[in-house]
Structures are given as structure tokens and as C-alpha cells.
Image 1 (tube, one colour):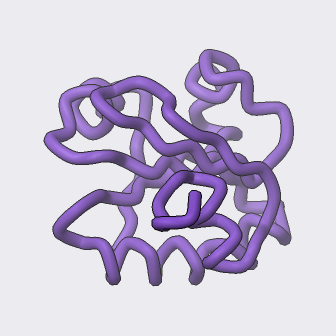
Image 2 (cartoon, rainbow, N blue to C red):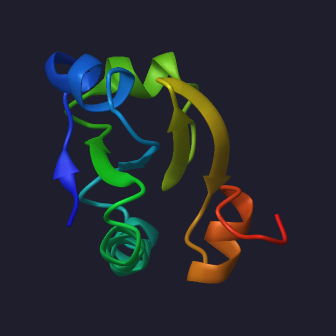
Length: 107
């Protein structure tokens, strides 16, 4: 399951997280964002003990989008110890997304 993150909750939810965090930068009007949402839900469910998945609505949290250079959506970033570690842009199948984020053995 994913949860929404705002500028106010960023520090606690991402920077201070005790495990890696996948951040999905998305918008309500973005078709590909809706297409990738079930993929991220599945990753969150399968890896519940090892990482968490959160969502940032770029229309509501423009400052976060700008801070991390989000120009296209969906942009999915993996944060480790509060720092960006990997980025994937665009809706992708689960295996491709996991590979781009460094979550597979062959990555």
C-alpha cells in the first residue's frame, strides 16, 4: 500500500525512513501515472518488509518536484538514507522498473 507524502511529511517519511523508499511523482491527470500505480502497489506489497512506496502529487507539491528535477511524469525515484539512489521515468512493466531502480539481482 502506498501513502501520500507532502513537503511537511517529507523529512519523516523519506529522509528519516529506516528502509529504502520508492517515491512516485505523479498527477491526477496523467494517464501513464495511473497505469504504473498497480505496478507500484504490487512492489509495495511484495517488498513490504524491505522498502516502502509513497506518492507525491506534483500539482499539490510543486516544490518537491522542482527540488528533485521532475520534468516528466511518472518519475519514480528510489531513496536510500534520504538521498536519491536511482530514477525511472515513464510507465514501465514491473521487471523493467525493478531493474532500473536496482531492485533485482541482475541490475
